[in-house]
Image 1 (tube, one colour):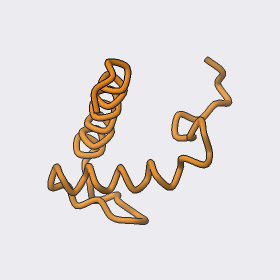
Image 2 (tube, rainbow, N blue to C red):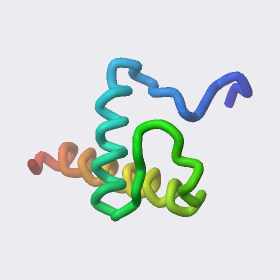
Image 3 (cartoon, rainbow, N blue to C red):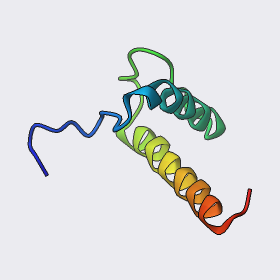
Length: 70
């Protein structure tokens, strides 16, 4: 992995807005007060939980798509 590559960069730049919206939806679902802009008042655990749950939901959606389910 290149040291110049940011892990916070969307592989498909056109998807950035949708990913941001998804992040806020997941945070709301988890009752984590994520807001646009500065979120330094949140713990790293809260931020990690949002990111982890996003990945879980994306994997579930991909598995459903691969199995032909909707």
